[in-house]
Amino acid sequence: MKRRTKSNLKTCFFIILLFSLIISAGILVNIFLNNTSKSLLNSIYVIQFNIEYNNWDISYNEIVKLKKEWKTIERVWSALIHHDEIDKISENLELLTEYIKEKDKTNSLSHLSVLKKYIEHIPEMDKLCIENIF
Image (tube, rainbow, N blue to C red; front, top):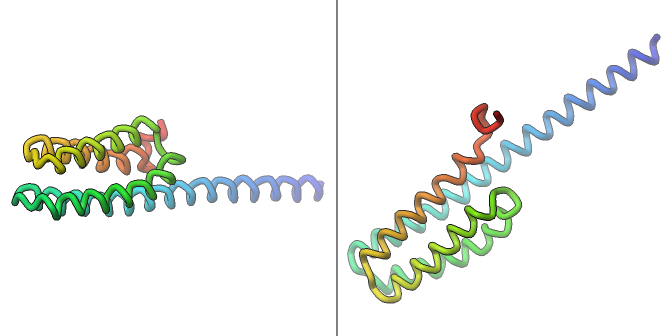
């Protein structure tokens, strides 16, 4: 009887440990997505400000920095989220770069807005909550 109790305790401990690891990993992923999306959004706000005030050179320099940052983040995000979302962000970044090069304020701001929405959506979509589990 004692062997069975020890075996049950080991199994119970293992299940609790595994559950804790899964929850911890989910929390860490959520923190990472929030931090990286905030960083990307900060760059977007800087670009938006400069486009609104026709600072095209600064906007272009900022979009180049944003694209470099995105390349780093994209590798990790591709393991965590749907590739469709990543493709949409990458596509909008490329279009935005071209519109900034051409100093097209209307299209730049509209694609910037779409890009902002995609990036804001990522942490919300993968947030650890009841709605996303069921």
